Image (cartoon, rainbow, N blue to C red; front, side, top):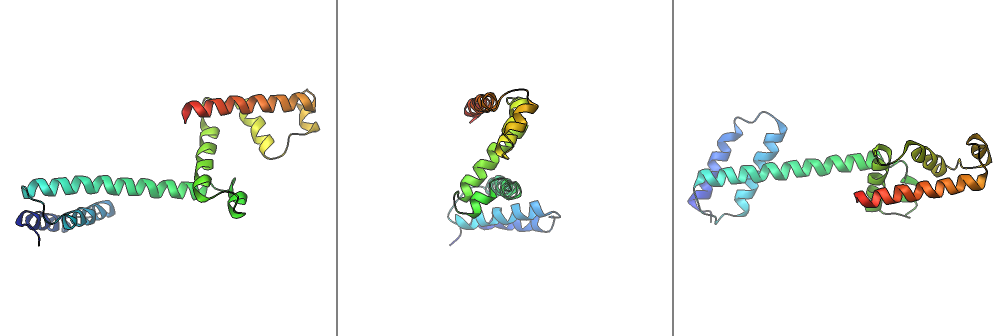
Length: 161
């Protein structure tokens, strides 16, 4: 049994239905109506109940859209870790975390350009004698540079995370 206040608030939201022209408002309205139906015993001014449900619904829809966008971004950027994901070495949550770290690595001001290039070459398997010659150092020195770059990036990531 719904209280009269909830019924009045529900009717007010139903009246808004006729004015809705975009998808966000429609989803918000639907969520607000659901919120009122979930708590049918609430009491208070219908205007306040309507405003509260409308505001909470907006938060809910924005949060849901943000999560959906993150999920799409995660799926779109999963090419680097996809082989490990496909083989069952990592799960979906680890895949998203790896993609977050990769996104930070590629765009962070805390990572030197030279470190970024060196580590990308290392990840793709290009650290070899030819690369060492191109950098004017021995293979051992190149490996030391890679190790130092990894340490700097790991430290920067720990400060951010």
